[in-house]
Length: 294
Figure (tube, rainbow, N blue to C red):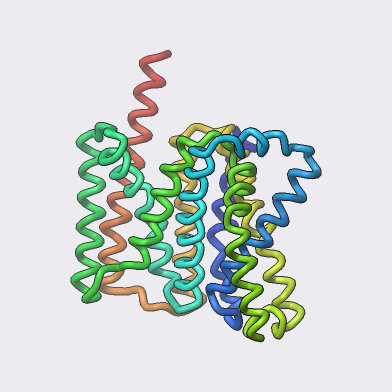
């Protein structure tokens, strides 16, 4: 239990400090950062899989068109989520990006109800409604939908939905997704290079090393998360997931001085209230099941 908590908490903390990493790459266009993240993530997982001599799964997957199609879809969703997040961070929207990951659990609940026909309990519907009020308030105050947050929540929720039914683990799934994305990334980078527009070539050595580090920076939190998820209850994992967006929010407000007060704080407070209701109800249900089985 303790080592599982440590793995999961470390994964969420690393995801929380991602803005520090992407802010250090502001001289590189967001699309190129995304392309390099695809390429170097694949390179890293290839090294790990080779070291573990764990390639047998790939042969079987290549013979299953439906599995490949599912992972092609999840790869598109994952890369979309990555791009939106990178663009948001490097355009002064760290706070709104954190909102996307705050509301993601409630987005998951809503998708489960609409697409998987999961029956929501009354308190869960209350949490979803309260979060909707928070989004409506932020929309009315800001004059537009918090589209960055909603797109981040939606892409990650649909990605999680596809991965929930996938047959591969975290490392194998990331390997297949980046393998499917690699041809697009390689061709695009080759075109940029031929047109002398590849920012990687003209960037400083430190920036080039940071881009190359996107491989382990992407994969290591995923591996820690997978290791932690196997060792701790889902209810505890659900509580730990708020570590990431909380750190992102604090970085956005205190380090990058993004506006966060008055009406915006009120909208976040509604969503935090929804998360509190949702989390406490989940803990109560878990405790009730444990008590009835005792």
